[in-house]
Amino acid sequence: MNYSVSPYYRRYFGKKYAAGFFVEGFGMLTSIDGKKIYNSDDHSIFTENPDVTDFALGAGLGWKWVSKGGFLIEANMGYGALLFNANKTDHNIVNKIMLNVGYRF
Image 1 (spheres, rainbow, N blue to C red):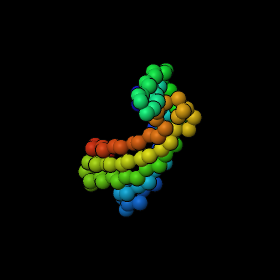
Image 2: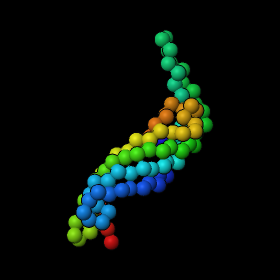
Image 3: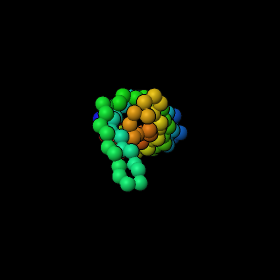
Image 4: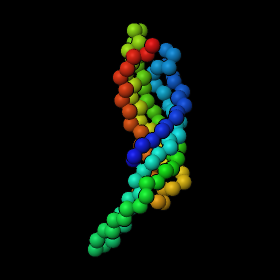
């Protein structure tokens, strides 16, 4: 993947505001390399095509802990599928894995 932009919507199930366990739905605009590998019994054929821009929809799970002082730790994972140009590259799914440490103002 060259780059991605991924807006999301989360639903938290914790007692604090925007903290605790959550589920999310996300969209992802991606730019993926256009490489394709065709396998055969004797050898593999590798082709280089232009980069592919596509959009994916997916869902994820995660958890966010926020201290009283504003320090936070967040982890989430998500999985989605490319919708329009998956046939132009070897990639047809997107995975989203994140670990975040920060401070909430």
